[in-house]
Amino acid sequence: MSISEPRHVERHQKESSSIRDFVFGFGDGINTSLGLVAGVGGADQASSVIILAAMVAMFTGAKAMAVQNYLAVRSQRQILQSEIERERWEMENVPKAERSEIEDIYKAKGFSGPELESIVNKITSDKKVWLDTMLTEELKLNVDIVGSPLKSAFRMFGAFLVGGILPIIPYFFASGFEPLMIAIGTSLSASFIIGAAKSRMANLNMAWGGLEMAGLGTGIALLGYGIGSELGHLGIINP
Image 1 (cartoon, helix red, strand yellow):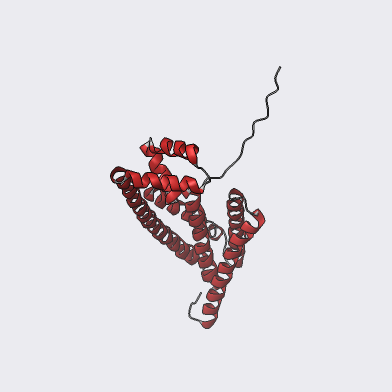
Image 2 (tube, one colour):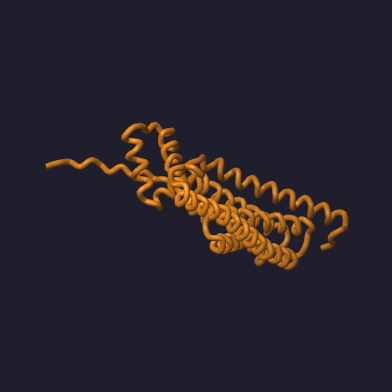
């Protein structure tokens, strides 16, 4: 009776445009709203005014981020697509030169002689494998990481709203200094969790990642509150 060896499973975190969009969108949303409620709250404005200002900023910010993300991802995909088409053209029209590039790539990895020839023959016998190899090994490109422009835009929009609404919620139930403290506490806690989760996926220190993201939110809240408070004291903004 044979005893099978325990199966070795390695966990690898792949790069993902979804994670990128959520982290950026959530972080921008929560910091935008937190800075605004701290600023307007620091000027001693009514809760209704804070809610209105924050909601307008949240939706306009979400739309702006979504549009910018769509354009950025679309432009990046167009650049990558042009590189793909160029490689396809070279494979069809100058195959010897492209084959030589494959040889150079695997020579640099330490292969030589019959082993190198076998690898090159295997790769160049399948045009899809050949193209993928040229893109990843020569050009270091990965279209999948870029993602879909439309999906990225919607993810950014949704993540921005999720982050943006958190600092606003306390003002629906209270007024004065109390909802501001709740908004700051909630926002910093959520930022810490997202930062820690992001660091865990990247196999980095979770505490440091959480503190880094929460620290940015703290700075924004203090800056917003300071500006609003000063404008209120100067009489520029009246409660």
